[in-house]
Length: 209
Image (cartoon, rainbow, N blue to C red):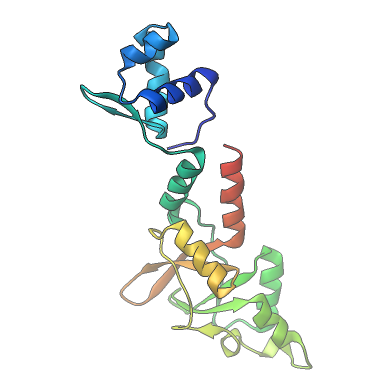
């Protein structure tokens, strides 16, 4: 379902159905002094968009849904798999220095740490790296596994999860992003990431529809 901007005739149809529904297509056409065939595309659009519902041998009736309701319904149906980004991963053996370089080069706020079999074992945030870099430690000699957040203290999501639920987790835990994972016999394989930036892009796409 995509949100639409109603034209004048479609708005008139909605008002007629709202006031008189259930009402047949012929009756709507009569009120507008148009033919049933002329109205057929408008009625189809309004029905598909969720403003109207049609019942056989009864007619059209108003669903009671406004643009706000329709936006909320569409948002609730969005899944991670349709909006996830490419994950940025580092091997567990790399140094903190290399991880900092990777974070800046890739312009991300979170790195996912994987083992030799590419399974998720840790997460590195900006705060983790900044905290370690403050002081006189030699960053090239400190492995990331010393400072990373480890499983099972990592929040993950899966492709079939709903965007609205992931957004709530990001807010509650005050984190920048989550790894999108696939379950395997050996562990969790990182297949994507979903971040606050993804959420912003989703919001902008709705405003531009």
